[in-house]
Figure (cartoon, rainbow, N blue to C red):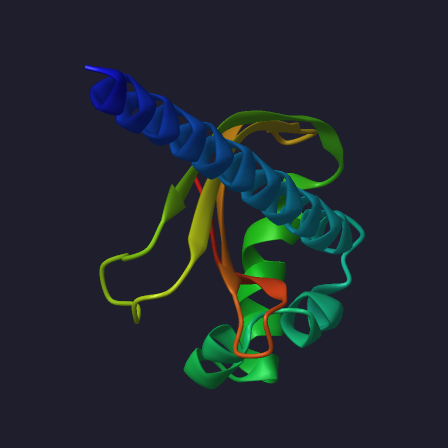
Length: 138
């Protein structure tokens, strides 16, 4: 009976460590996403591409990204508010190689779009740094 209690205690301890690691991962990813979104808010579309993951940069050229993001974000005008709605850790995502990802969803408001949902995917890049690998706004 003591062996079972010990094993159960070890499982609980391991689960708490995993949750703490996951919380740290999500906090790190959220900080990266927030910094990246700030660049987009300032119209620094070139910088968003430069700070994106290698997977992102391989998928779209810098010029095409600047054009695309500019076409979507410029008409919205100034950011009024942004609030994190959810953040979830994944090791697999459709259409992406296996790895470490955090998908963050923000409820945002802009001068010309009162209600928007921004989804930012952050991944652990080849060098171990967290970087944005996807952005979607609706």
